[in-house]
Length: 481
Image (cartoon, rainbow, N blue to C red; front, side):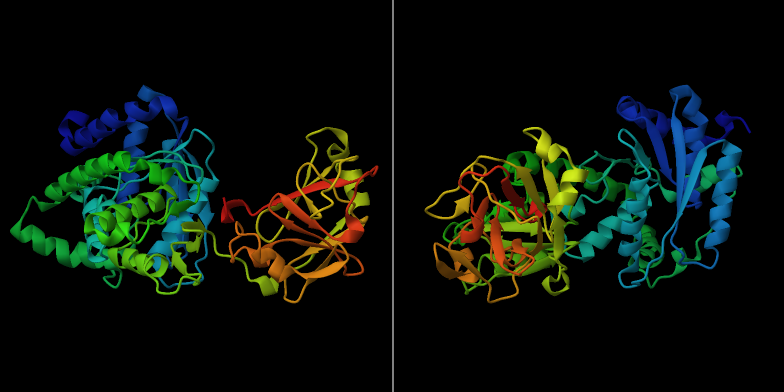
């Protein structure tokens, strides 16, 4: 059937031809998230129809979640379709152990696999459409999301440090049009039986709620789509007005309680908090979560409390009038000692002894310890504290461990409690202290304590002039910047 007699085919290809040129100069390979269902099949088929015209390099990726007894057959189907279209194809298998919050867990694992197969300059295409947008809007509305959450799905998400660019070209196209395209082109696609299960929130909205609303307001899906565009525009304006809060590395300043006496100031901080979390690619918090964060971190009656708030795959923690977003801290009781043999390092890493920039990095429980040869440097005799100007003699063999309680270090002939010593370092958060690396010799005597770029060195191991001394620094990485 000629294209001019396929109105939905003409419509959908027209949508792609309006959108693709906007992004074609910035992206090399076009990666299609291909489930084998009607939506992604239409996307793949329509892209292939215009690939020669726009010189598109297309690759399809299928992720098998192993949630259906038919999943193997779907994978085989996708492989055959891509072969018939002469498209590069790759499939992945993922096992989801924890079935709680199944939809969200499956989505995270799927995107992780998709991104793992992409290279710089690639762009991921998904077949999200108008009905998906409406369903997402209702899901966010029912969960109490704010402005950011209600913006729902965006057409284009630029690449970031943790993800690649994503294009969702069908957001203005409804499901009926995609089904009509499939019929016009005799497409053979798979049917996922789980899409009928109204146990899942999205399916309940799709099969029960939306048909009911459509029976009264037939155009409501288009109206919601227009609303999401307006909300996205409003969010962009707000982001520009409050943008400074989203530029912090991994913290946001807590305003003074006296300032938050005005309702408008509370609202402003709430939006700054949402913008900041969004800039870190954290799922939009609900209003209930925002209130819980305010209560825990600002309006708590205990000034000594160290609140922890779990959000997405991260934790919020407080230090020095700032809220930090950090990965979950490892269980201190499960950490192993790290044994170092300097003789082996000399043989394996000549650069540490070679140039001014030669360093040896040791990954600790959180962050990285940097060790560098710095012969003929000196140490502060008043404090036994070393920074990049000073040096430390190290035993040829030593190990790195962490606080377990009761540790002491010898400084100027006197024994000092490490716990009390760390409390004098006001720039060190209480939740970082247990993970500060402690260097021991093989007799289990403390050699040094590394506190960021400061190294507190035991009397027996500080160096004034020596042929082979080392400068050491430690950074907890993303946990504290």
